[in-house]
Picture 1 (cartoon, helix red, strand yellow):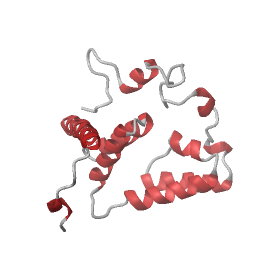
Picture 2 (cartoon, rainbow, N blue to C red):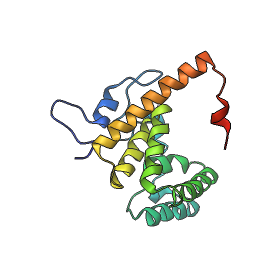
Picture 3 (cartoon, one colour):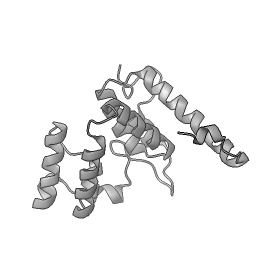
Picture 4 (cartoon, rainbow, N blue to C red):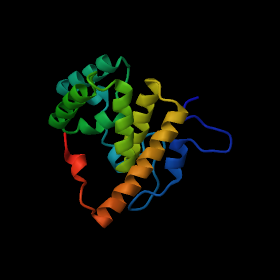
Length: 168
């Protein structure tokens, strides 16, 4: 079962996001979680310059999809950033020493810690497409919560780092 699907007695993540207050007031918009003033500045394919369309085409070809998500449409307002970030994403998220599911799980964990709703939704969907189960998602969140708690305790108490942790 997909994590984002509606379950009996619960709200989907987009529904929950749409009902929660945004920092600075107002509500999150269902669908993309963006402030209407920002989402109005999305650069759609039909309105994109040739340079931006080339990046959009590469995104769709690389991901084997027929659409470009709103993150890229927002970045397209600055084509230099769009090209740079897309190049970085292709390089870092490409297969390597870590498998693609592990990379998505790390991305979700960091996004949860940074409270980035968009990236949580996007990379959770990516992790699901690579095989993440509901049980793995729940365990991932438990580890993220535990790491954040113990990191704060360690920062507060500031114990010296054990020498054996520093040995190769």
